Length: 227
Ligand code: AMP
Ligand code: MG
Image (cartoon, rainbow, N blue to C red; front, top):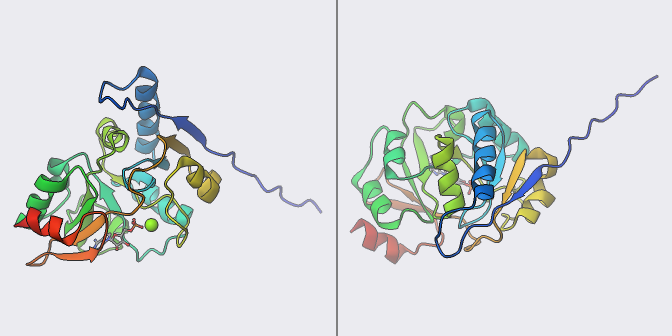
């Protein structure tokens, strides 16, 4: 009898992004790559993106089907909530149902940067993003590629590290390709991540706020920011 043919999905396209180091304007090729990624994200695709910490596996945070794709691609347990990446404090505030003073202080002092704030979740965020919990983790990344992508897409991006669950977090596009392969639709390659460790996570729903996960920003830096 005939056996079904295993339909291998093709490997993802890798788009090289050459960001000007002098802070000048991005090239037309870079803007075209960002717009292709933004379009794919708005249509529910999965895009691996560079941030200053590690590469993230991004999907439209407003689209529960797209977010389900992140959990499938990573083999991530549904009980492990995702960090939502935003273009700035204003967007973060719009995704929370309360914006505690500690979150406002941290956002003002360390964003864009490697600190994530946990705040009460707005009903605009689907439950799958937060493992059905009442809070949401939010961060504005410092990497110009991820930040401009979020702005151009016009949507917040749910994005855990772009590796299979339990594997090492990727700091290059090649790591992403080796770990996730055809499970991702597109990879934006902007070279190596600067920091290589995940963001510091701070719970801002308690007084005083608590560090849930240590990271690139030290306790002293966070305390100075919160006051
Ligand atoms: P990853 O995306 O793999 O770097 O993991 C994100 C981590 O952020 C999770 O493993 C949690 O520890 C933390 N996190 C995300 N959302 C929340 C939340 N709503 N409350 C507390 N911690 C969270
Ligand atoms: Mg991870």
